[in-house]
Amino acid sequence: MEEEKIIIEQKIKEEEEIKNIFLMNPNKINIKNKEILNNLYSLTNIGHKKENQDISFCIKSKNNFDCVMGILDGHGIFGKMISHTVHDFFIKKISDFLNELKFFDDLKKNIHILTENFLKKCFDQIENDICNGNLKKNSELSGTTCSLLIKLKDYLYIASVGDSRIVLGFIDDNKIKSKRLTIDHRFNIKKEFDMVSKAGGVICSKNNKSNTLRVWLSKEKLKELNIKYNTPGLMVSRSIGDSIAKIAGCSSEPDILSLKIKSEYKFIIMASDGLWDVLTDDEAVELINNFKNENLSAKEATTNLMNFVMLKSKNDDLFLDNITISVMYL
Image 1 (cartoon, rainbow, N blue to C red):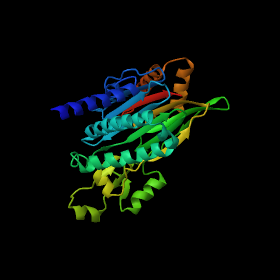
Image 2 (image 1 turned 120 degrees about the vertical axis):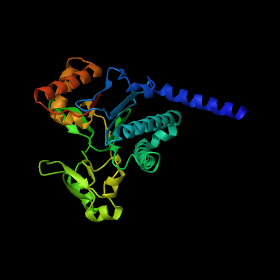
Image 3 (image 1 turned 60 degrees about the vertical axis):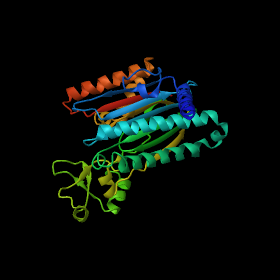
Image 4 (image 1 turned 90 degrees about the horizontal axis):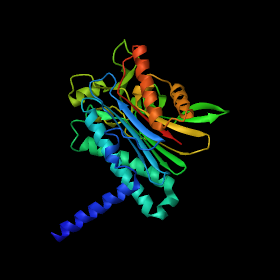
């Protein structure tokens, strides 16, 4: 009994340490889309689909220097289950990581290497947990994109798989401009096409009416696995889950970028492909810049951008995917 009491007390202490880092309990942030701070906000909308498989989180530390953003866009029958599982995993892992940095000053000397290695290990671990754990069967034809941004003082650390895009708004020659900080991992990118093709995956559209490239198992691989239908038909070359697509040559390895924040950097937009299906990078950046110049908070700017996309999709008679938008003022 005494040993159990010690374990429970230690767990409570650890949970309190995590809470002390953040202004809000991270597990409650995106469930009700509560405001975090004037310069950081996230909002999601189901669009025209029956289920919202997107999920996001925004966390800011009490010192106002460190914050974290993440968006996951699930796909497949079990996409929501997988995106939520990955979301919970990263919330815990990132909380632990920032807690370590808080208590051990010597770790900060190698912060760039530590952060990049941390992100790589996290993606490896969650991929293994999803594809070889309790969700092994569910993840054969379901998975999620994952884009993360960790801001530590004056540096940004970004890791992404899939097509949930991160875009920077910055000033150049007194004009607002956009810079894409992630790659859309789709098969129109030569690097992604070559990666999967060399591994034996077949890349082509689903039918002659579509220009969207997808990955399929080869006839030889279908026969080897005794699968009677063409599969998986995935549109992204990198994701978490999608174990059959991994047989075809897809990957869960993230692109990782570190970037020092400059004075001309004004804000970050992170969004699932539902936004980018409707607006270009330049259009989204122009809108957020206008809202920011009107002294609107990140919450108001994000809400206005979401409303604009909803109205545009209606006026242009566009089918709207799940859409999640996160905005961070720098």
